[in-house]
Amino acid sequence: MNFKHINPFAMKIVSDILKQKPHSFNYIEPDALVEDALSLMNNLNRSFLIVMHERDFKGIFCEHDYIHNVALRGWDSATCKVEEVMTKDLPTVTPQDSVERVMQLMDAHHVRYVPVFSSFYFEGVITLHDIMHLVVENREQTFDLPLTMVSEHEYRIY
Image (cartoon, rainbow, N blue to C red):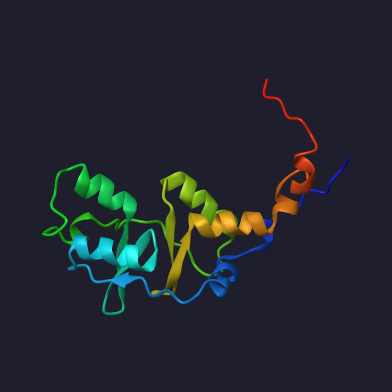
């Protein structure tokens, strides 16, 4: 069976993903306590928070930051501030960048979140989850066989 392989990421750009995402409300101030950030993440059912001061993007605080920069160091989340442990130096993209570019940056920098800026204005965050969602939406173009046919074939690893 021959299937035409089309790269769905060559057709998609960052603004396509941002248009599909609901407006973000998972913001926190840099001087907030980690304990409060964790509570907010739990209440919002999110794995990350966007750290903003007034209208300025400062970084991302995520589960990984808590584990590696607080818990494993034995720091107290009730006294530690988000700005002390958040991720600051993330690669950035523009709304016009390709999704493929986002994937390359995530892989090269070993990150799960990429902030989006238009000029100097913060537009949002593209997550690894967003990329996975795009792949699932475009699975017919991404995989060699339609997913309904995968179970009909036996695959062996040699």
